[in-house]
Length: 299
Image 1 (cartoon, rainbow, N blue to C red):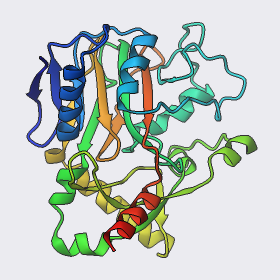
Image 2 (image 1 turned 90 degrees about the vertical axis):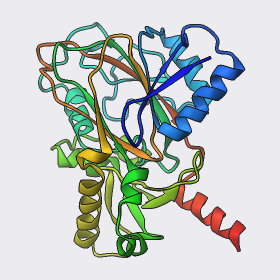
Image 3 (image 1 turned 30 degrees about the vertical axis):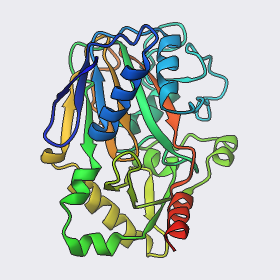
Image 4 (image 1 turned 180 degrees about the vertical axis):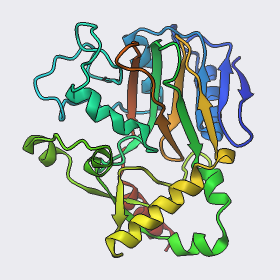
């Protein structure tokens, strides 16, 4: 039977007494899913999973989103297609150069975001495993968007109800000075629309849905919408809603992209290796389409 230790007053828990390197029992899977819906971010210590084991564990949460090389055409992958390489090493194990396209593209991961909100069908959850960590820095911070929504004044909740934002990967990357997208990439990832608030399916709680990918509010002047998004992100990332994780080799964390944000913290990436591998599970439906479906059922 798995054990659950809460690490933050609002969210984040450590799961113990489970081995992700062996097939899980139905009871363990059910207990982990229940904890996931309640705590939204789960930490598993001492789990040096192989690529295959990470993929198999990830499948318990839904269909995986395959990775693409839309920003680094022609680069050789060192991981299987279901895993995103969020390390600072190339396919030969060498540190990425200062001007490497993948390194520059990844700088935007230091902005608060939720994974794949720039896709029509965004991510349900992500699983990140630590194969090698630097001696300092490189932490990941998480923000609890359900608690952040609960803390909003009623007037603000009413103001943002029903709003839709345009999300684009180009919005987040341009904030960090990266514009190296070819026409194939731009055709593959056009801007998409996502709701600003949503009901979290696993808990029934209302949550903010924000990211650095969010460009503006549909139907509002661009700058007014961007101010609102920036204000909400600032509110949601106050210390009382956030948790910083210091990685150890063998850590695996799963987080719910529907009700959290996260960001990577800097480290000396030109001097120290950081080998991290992410699997991403699809949410299977666009948030605007899901909200319309819920409205249709209600009436």
